[in-house]
Image (cartoon, rainbow, N blue to C red):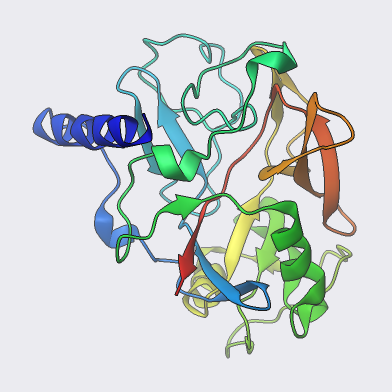
Amino acid sequence: MRKVLVLFFMLAAVVAVAAGQEVLDSSAVGKCGGLFSVSPTMKVRFAPGNLQYQPSTHLCRFAAAQTEVIGWKPFYGNERYKGWIDLFGWGTAMQPTNYSTDPAQYAFADWGFYCGLPTDGGRLWRTLTMDEWTYLLAKRPRARRLYALAYVDKVFGLVLLPDGWRCPKGVYLKPGPKEDYVNWYNAEKWAILEASGAVFLPCETRRVGTDAVGNASVCHYWTATPNDKKPTEALCLLVDSYVPRASSSAKYIGMSVRLVQEVL
């Protein structure tokens, strides 16, 4: 079944190219070149932007820029919608427009496996687990010096810095968990940080059913980890103005997704 779906997405991408539709340029893969330890034995590279999906063509792509967010759209549940969406229920790779508020309708299928996006060396994209996020943010060497809260082109979010990162000339970055309104970057300054391997997770509203909830000053990113104590919920990465941390949310909540590729 998985092989059939992967072939389907690949075929859809070929058809889209023939029809002149926009798809991810394979040269964009690996744009976020920094290496990030997510366990003592595993390093990953992040996708160059949040995952997006077009219902009318069943195609996926990465956001054109790390700061790009789409947020809530009134046509979210419409399979004929020609725009792009980026708020997904937990593990909805096989049905990205699932907007049911029944948690029983959600069983995890990794977006990375089914998205059909180009890869480096045949390695598939995948979603980080909560344990991997915890290691990245709290346990890897110098972990708490390798992330920061920041505004990039007026968008608030979390900057992740690669292993062994050193601040490049021309920019200043104050690492750590609390936002002190000192990390502000225009496009030029962010380009310097991005070239050094920095990753940016932009904040965005969430979605319940076909309605928007919350505000755009908090990040919620799905992980691949269910909540074993609450079967109707799964774990996500929560980023507000303080410490990035694990949180639990109903599986039907629409949130952002950022994929990674393992580096062997």
